[in-house]
Image (tube, rainbow, N blue to C red; front, top):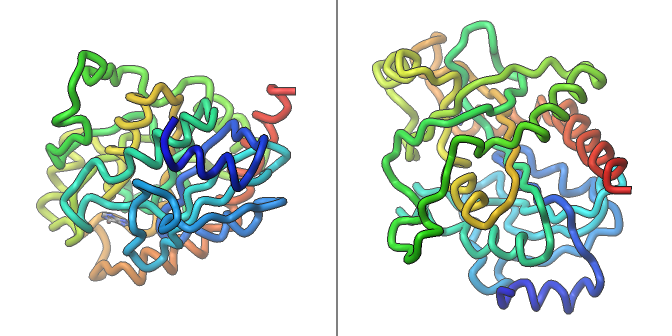
Length: 269
Ligand code: HPA
């Protein structure tokens, strides 16, 4: 039990979330759709990250989405803010301590496939940790040797594919490659990423997947595609564009996530 989990239990007695959700850049509006919400600022939760990036709220929101008890992390820490890939450890360990069995991670990403443009949602099926950093470096014990073969849960991915079809959300699928940021990639790096087998690039999520697997959580991850990779379109990339494009696709994205929650709630019952 983490200190934060104890505090959360005191603020929301008897509440046991089944699913944790991490909201990426520009996708924070989903937190406002949580019913019966209890909202706790990260600043009140020991070990939770300071939320320092615009487009990220910095609050834990507990309540129901699609009938499912969820714990929404509205705002995440990124490696590029402080150089610490481990900054989300306490938050993810706390979700596990509260009883979450699964974690849905979301992000904004650049697509490496011209046919998958801004506004598309991509189901992440695997990743490449290009940054070379790992949140488990320095962690003692044999549990640190986390297997990553089945890191992206097949059952959750299957549900998302089925729900995508039912909700008419045209899901792309692919491999997400983690660059540290905060500068965007160069066109040469994007060409390299394509050769190495990536379908999208972004500045988050991978350390959280590793931490979640370390904590025994099942993982699903979705990218909101906000742009084509650097050099693939005749434009300069910016965080403003990321936020604007993510917000444009947010309604479709929210439908998908809410339907996943309803689907999980049905199975739970
Ligand atoms: N690169 C890295 N991160 C991103 C991008 C990108 O092109 N778009 C949104 N987040």
